Amino acid sequence: MFDLIAVADGLNALALPIFGIGSLLASRLAVGPAARPAQQFFLAALALVTVATLRTVIQCELAWLTHMMTLMVMIVGAVVVPSHRISSDTV
Image 1 (cartoon, helix red, strand yellow):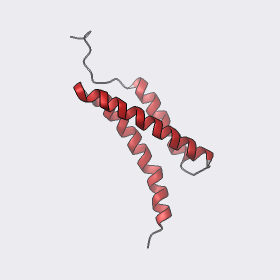
Image 2 (cartoon, helix red, strand yellow):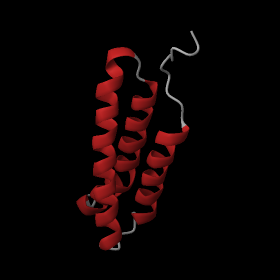
Image 3 (tube, one colour):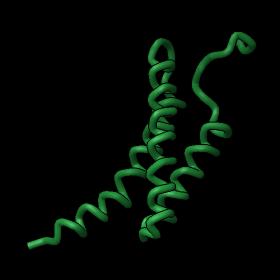
């Protein structure tokens, strides 16, 4: 029988980075009318990851470095990674 607490802790360390980086990719790859909701979803995910990271750091949990790296990738990725929107300058 497996330990439910260990499984929940593992999901905490893996699910949040997948969720955060997935929302970043979705907001950067969305085009047309789907771009605006994807950006709003990314901002909500960024707020959720920030709160989860603060909680993890305050409680000195083991996944704090994983959450900090996820937050860093989301912030830097939002600035550095170009979106796939076609601007009027290139047409």
